[in-house]
Image (cartoon, rainbow, N blue to C red):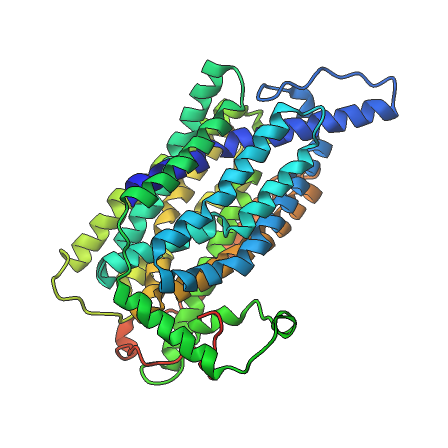
Length: 491
């Protein structure tokens, strides 16, 4: 799976900076053109896509870009929030491969639309790229792709080593984000156009689909797929019959989250509290990461005059540190504390003190890093702050693996689908709040948004002390229920 996942991550990382600057340049050109139309005495230099354009370092342009990013995140986040839980449950019934492939088509459509808009900026408005965000959301977006990759890893690893397996996928993601900007910068220099990056990204997504289809084995056994289908059929048979109009009227977006509140034999109030706390911490940390990725880039461009090359180097340095944490630091910690992988697994017993300690340490690294962003007097301090915050990346795979340790193996797709729902909602709420804060405060003091983000990590750190190790609740039995009626139509 990892050889297929790497080009996908390389494409994801490679377009972050070029797309941010492409959108900024397109919006800047439109803003300057509209201003010139209103004021005939206003003169401006032509905006060159992918080049340094000093006239775009304007608070009004920054505000417009932040709002555009808000609209794109809303479209992608809202629709992926609806789709993600169903894709996770579907993968339990039909296998991981087919559903993972489906999530990639949205990214392909988004790249095609970006290429069309970038090729015809005078004829097609930059706001047409929002259609790409919509299609990406309808296919589940990368949040669903990551959740399904974790489900694949869960099928292949024992619970004790799952945080390391998840760390490999996170490490691959951030290796792509680290190397992608370097490769993108080189391609732009060679080809002389920023659009070459999107053509290469399109090829990477197509390679991902073909490699998964042809070479990657299915991780979920036929027996487990049949068992999941039988459970769903039983639930449908017991549920009251509804026509499609009634189904739409009674649709509950949050119903898949019941998997995080199990009842019955093997469950307990401490188990439910752990699941709630883990999901809350994971959602808030993911929301901060997604809500600030583009803000950090445009903030550095505005505050320190960074161009696309400087931003690419920053992302590369930060994510190289993150990869080191995920590929080296996390496995070493796990090996030292837990020892080598044992032939006999202890089963799904919840998180242990190593998991809890890693989560708390990751939160502290993020907190220090975001305080550094807010107080950075120079670009060098900004880069150091980013590298410190990057070490907090070891928390995310640990949080995800801890969630799966609290749930029987036949519910892995469901719990990660529910996590995908929370991630998608975070992609809506967090960028909405943080982009609004940035757009309203950039003219006053641009670092205010990072002060707000640091306060979020203070809250998350306090919440983390409510986590309890697995010794405080009993072995989890697969017979416990995740809903009172057992009538999930989404199961």
